[in-house]
Length: 115
Length: 115
DNA sequence: TTTGAATACCTTGCAATACAAGGTACTAAA
DNA sequence: TTTAGTACCTTGTATTGCAAGGTATTCAAA
Image (cartoon, rainbow over all chains, first blue to last red):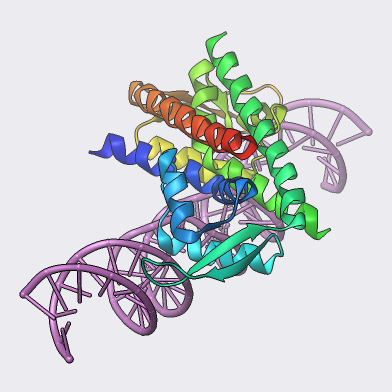
């Protein structure tokens, strides 16, 4: 199982790099609470643990990229809905560019690899 | 400078996720020594420091994904040329898949963001 | 009315690791 | 013999993802 170990480890590494980016992208589409963010990321095969997302949301809030409001739920405890701020949207644009740059970089190396 | 700080930080994060992948891709195209790997990555805007690459190459060697040979240079000290192993090529295939999966995941979230 | 299941929130402590900084050694030219 | 360029490597620090453990709410069944 060492083989998959190396790959699994790297998939995790790759995911880490885009965590904040993914969260901002999801919140740019609409307000969500922690569990629903985790679910939406899971839907596209980006797995995040609770212990990762909660501290992260708190950090993004402190940085002023996010805000939140409490909302009652009929099926359990109240939910903390996060929303993206204007500052957050500005940063998101920068992250879009960063992601594009990285993708292109990888693509270039890949092509060179085949040339 | 706080704005760029957040983005710079995230660009770094994104880069980290693909370091091993990039190295394997580059070595799949041909043998290289540490400094030339750094240069090739720099060429596609993936910045890596020496203090990152040396321990990483050593780790990949230990995992059996790489090997190396010494080669004299006419313009300085001998160079340690790294080459990818069969095991390394196998792992690389897995990383290709992991990268594709991640790219598609991000792409999906991005599109949902615009829908 | 208590128990259990589902949902949601959060914190603590560990482990991994990128990188800045500092160090060695070889070659060639000034 | 000193300086500049190139190449190798290690140490210590700081960040941070996440497993594990914990609290609180709702609802339904026992």
